[in-house]
Length: 87
Image 1: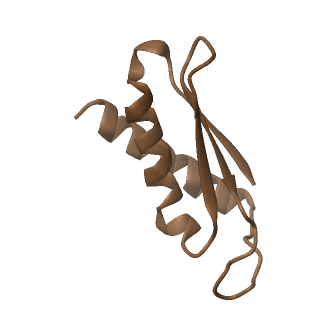
Image 2 (image 1 turned 45 degrees about the horizontal axis):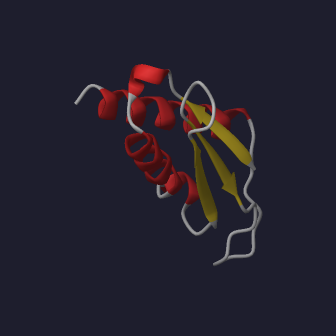
Image 3 (image 1 turned 180 degrees about the horizontal axis):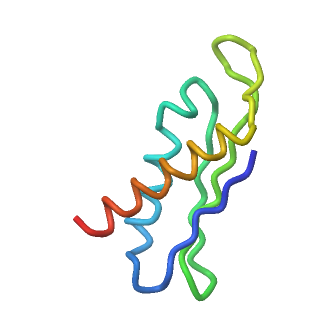
């Protein structure tokens, strides 16, 4: 799976944006899944590409992406971003 997490120019440094991506990768949502976080600084805005291996390395079961998991991921991402940016 591929998630893009984007920020406006004034919403943080590359280090802060990367940290948010790593926090999402380490969240319960992706527990026991391999996740890579790549932070891009080459565009007019900072953004992360978060790539998730769909196979759980403990159980061998595949990650299920549906309306509920997508909603949970977006809510988790938004809450973490807002909490971090306004702290």
